[in-house]
Image (spheres, rainbow, N blue to C red):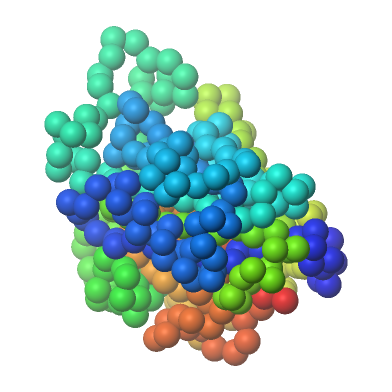
Length: 392
């Protein structure tokens, strides 16, 4: 794929939208989804009659409604859509895989304008368990949980922390270096009016926070959030119907590793990062900003290494002091605050923020210059997905 695309055969992000972001919201998750869809459709300059596809991750999960309370069928029904293509399942290459799937659909002519959404309602669900029952304890375990639940490692914090500890033991990463991810996120979130976090984080506050699972403290972990985020993917030959600045999906990649304890040595960010560059003639040197999945603070370090911004084992040194990843640094990272500062938007917030930056609509958090290329990622444990986005 060349820098100069054949527009008709390309896929573009034409619109973005986001509902209210909060904790324990009372507005229903379906209404939050409708809010975000309406904002994205208006942003693109489209009408609902022009939407002919819907894509989501992971689809509605009846056994875990707080995690994913809205499905594709509900969106099609409530918005009155006439679709030719839709998809939504957990068996995918992480959250942003839903956007990559939509890009493939419009490139192949199966759709022209696709709504991609991710709705989370975990904080509200915890406050209202009668409406959104938590996952029930069972006598036995099956599926992916069989590899983690018997060891008390149901939370992703547990196994992500093991990867982080290896970096400490093998490569010398310190907690002060790891802290730069959370500090950077909080600093940027304070400039983002949609973000949950409203003030910067100091090193003393970080180091004084209680530990969750070594080496992660409270500030290394994202928090349950209620929100819906929408991205509209449009075909290149349908851009004459779009009024907003389109952002090209220049490349995508994803991978899924085994969940079992006989798992791959490295998190999926590493093979996904290598594969992303195989699908484009852009390189890491062309990237102006990165929006890296940070459900836990260590994950952006794996993406820095996996995508080749630094050598494996050098990610903590790359972010030391925080200047390189700051808004005015050589590689501005998580400019909207990431999941540690903006809220747990579960991956889609990184695609949203990439478009904001490439359109130069970031306001107080806008990076300087003329940004042309961004990388957005999701996941980074046993599954991962990455998008390379370009403003042509």
